[in-house]
Length: 179
Image (cartoon, rainbow, N blue to C red; front, top):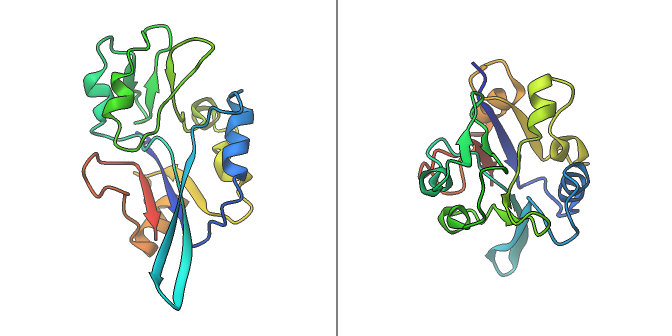
């Protein structure tokens, strides 16, 4: 069984926003809607200070707080471990937005339902292409694949870098960061 995940190497991210723009185009989002957000952090102490760009999105948590609070069951985890939204069942109550510690959900102003990163589900499930944010990145920041396949690129990168989720094991996130 496949369990999709991603590694994001913030040491390589230059904050060009190519991943976010590609995601917005792929998902036909309005300019103010975005599934990918950025935190700009200053690290170190003077005179050795550097900027760190930390892109974040839905972490497709195994212990998803958003799913636990959804009153209609609109938020669910599919057989590949991707946290999905059934937009037909979403009533726009925003409980999931309040429960998400990553601020990863947005309201689709056209429909009133809540939306989020889908790991480009259709492409991934059909094996036709990689997640859009991965292919758009000119710096090779993102690695996507099956976390349960020890030979996948993402599994090899995780083993080599010892990347960790942003909030540790709090939600059993499937996105890992090299920082």
